Length: 443
Image (cartoon, rainbow, N blue to C red; front, side, top):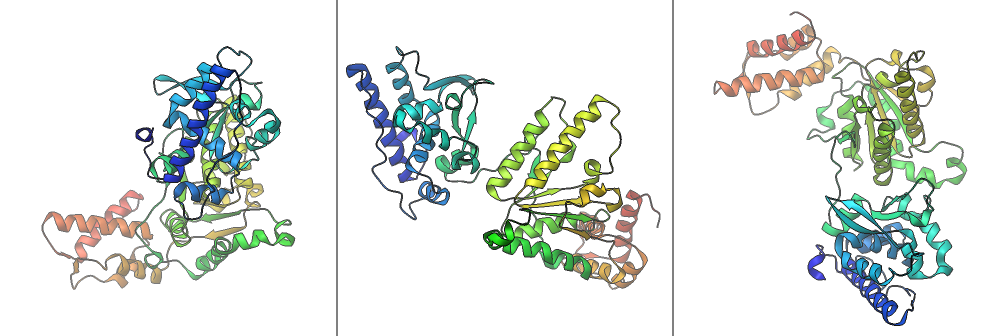
């Protein structure tokens, strides 16, 4: 069986072996003696520093029963033969529903259902199995397994039990799962090589960010204060508002970098799917993954969805409002950090603004701030000609940090094209002209 398990985690392999050996012995006993001996537990305890698998069990505080469910969920990807032998042994008893056949990757696969767990541990433990598979149980609420109903009115124990992608990646390959951006997962991780030193913000903006940093630093200790935490809503919601290019997205990215949290940008352009219910389903994937992994969620151009309400004039409008209502509810209930960005605070619905813990302004940089941005941007491998005067450029041209970065890119590429190691005033002016033309402005 070892060749079937593509993992280096010996504790995981040991548990899989125990479950497989037990199932195969049980299958043989059913065929020969028509008897069923119940699962009595794992022989080895979970030890600290025992590898990825042991760390996962300890981190989530899983019981022996939950540990068994996790292994059974993984079996179709590791050793499906074990489940097939049990199905053959029990095929004469039509009242037993232990597995379900489903289409997977072009073929059919035998997948465990909740009833299999009850069959293995004994009917006297049915209630414990139901609790382990309930939405409030650790396996589901911590994002370790998926439950797929086999019918609208089907009972809980007939649901298919499968591992989440995060669990599969961790146990099979000892690596973290990174979801792929697309229509069914409308969120993408934000990363940057820049640091706080590269960002120039006014004092008032930094002051507003202090409260955001306080929450990221201390929210776990805050939640532990029962007398305080029961009187306030979990999570933190902040609005960044100001013109494009003033550092809102970079600030969100750097907050994640500072506090070692992944930051995901939710693409609101994918908000409304042409298929009824798909948008809600896809947003649920994002929020569920975010809650399990404590992501910071960032929504740009939020006024497009959360702007001042208008009367609905068509069924499409009403459907879009249903999707927005779902998103609003998930934002309100999210226990982590939500950051929304808007170019204009005045465009936002006042009722929605009351849901924020803080609103932070990102204005167009002042002359002095633009001077700092120019000097930081052009502190690089290129030499500057003597005619470059950043003081004058800062005074004459009202540009954002993003626009100045674009000028740097233009100048660097132009210099490299002609084999030059220096940048002069004329080249910078050409870069500024291009930026202003994009904004519909003249020099």
